[in-house]
Image (cartoon, each protein chain N blue to C red):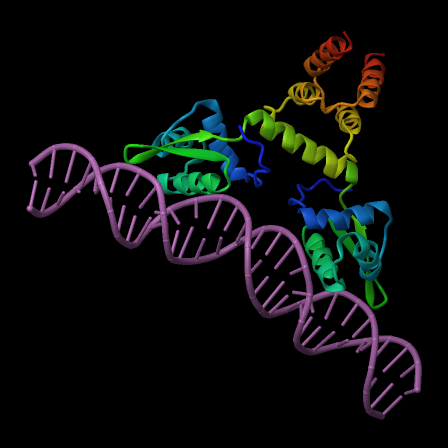
Length: 126
Length: 126
DNA sequence: TCCTCTCGTTTACGCCTGTAATCGACTACG
DNA sequence: CGTAGTCGATTACAGGCGTAAACGAGAGGA
C-alpha cells in the first residue's frame, strides 16, 4: 500500500475503514449492513463516507458491474502508527516514554498490560 | 480542579491551554504574545479561543480590573490521560499493551525510551 | 471634557464533518 | 416494453472549527 500522506481520516470515516479492514472488498451495501447495527446509519450516509474516503485515497473503488467493490488503500497498521505518533508528538513531546510513564502513574496499566510489556521488552533486548 | 466531563479541546485551543499550563494566570494579551511567535495568530484570534475555552469550562477567567486573568480549570495531566485513553480505546481495543507492541514493532521506540520504560517497570514491580 | 486606546463581546465567514435526500442512469422483473 | 428498484454522483444543511474584524464600554492622557 502506498505511503502518500493520506489526509486525516475522521471519526465517522474510521468506522467505515474498520469494517473494510476486517474484510474486503465489500460493496457499499455490505458495508452499510455491517455498520447499520453499530451506528444506525442509513445507506446514504455510508455511501457519502465511502466516497469521501475514496477521494482521500484511503480506499480504492473497483468497478464490478454496475457497482463498486471497496478495499482499503491504507493499512490499518500504518494508520495506527500514524495516529499514535501524532498523539505522542502533540502531547508528549514526541517521546514514547512519557506516555508510558503517564499511563503507569494513572494506573491505566493492568497487570496483564504490564506482563505483556515486560515480555516485549525482554524480546527486544534479545 | 473539577472533573466535570469537559468538552473536547480542539487543536487550536490546545495551543492556548499549553501556554496557560506553562504559566498562569495570564491576560489575553500575554497569552497572545506567547502564541504570536509560534502560531502567528492575531490578538483577536487568541481572544476567541480564550472565550471558547471559558465557555467549555476548561479555563477560568477572573476579573482583574477591566481585564481577565485566565487560568486552567483542567489539569494538563488530566487532559493527557483523557486523550491517551481515547486513543487506546478507539484504536487498540482499550488495552495499552497493543499500543506498546505497535510502537515497538514499528521501531518508534528509541533506545532511551526503552531504557526509561524498563526502569519504570522495575519500579512498578518493587 | 474629549479623544484614543484597550478590553471583552458579538458577529462573520469559509471549510470540515456528520448525516442524509435527491437525481439521473441503468437493470431486471413483469 | 414499461416501470420499479438500485447505484453512484450531486446537493443539502446544520453545527463545529480556525481565523479574524467590528462594536461598544470604559480608562487614561491632553
